[in-house]
Length: 256
Image: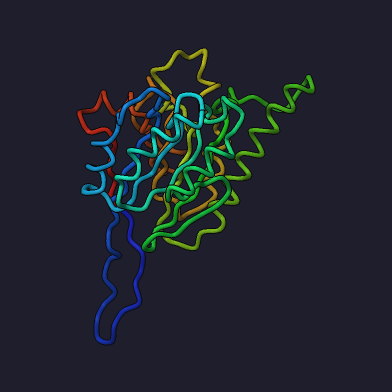
């Protein structure tokens, strides 16, 4: 859990009090298929009573097909609290991520891909993120042109994340990603694929800003539940398969 407070304008004769805490729920990797029959109706009904905002961390569908998104939206419409979200790699599989994003936006989800939103004094920033590895093992732009193009995409995704965070003026902010920014939350997956589960470039970007209170991501189904950036920002893996190992609640709730 995380806590953060922001100063409020005091009334005459009163000392400033703490900002009202917000309960933020987060989940990713629902992987709704086109033959799914209302698989997450209970989740979206329940979360509306448990939290003030819901973060959706990508891979909400299996292949990014229109019928899959339609099945998802049948359940999503039961959510009565504000929703923010990012796409995952599975939403790109069918080659229509813009259409998936449009459908989610039309359903009321505030999608993040370089954008930022403020809800009741708390900022929300983020994007899908990308791969590339962690720490000293992060892939560098050296050698073949194909490697350089690969690394350039990782850099561009980190730049989108930076643009998103930079737009916020809130003292408390939540960053949503699909890919992991720290190795701790992919540990548990085979080491051979760690480089394909996230990138330290994302954490380096986050650590340039003092107002980030919490980072949530998905993607690593067998990864660890939490970690921290070098500056100490808490990072949580909220992929549904990970949450199932922690208990019977199909999302995680944080107070900030």
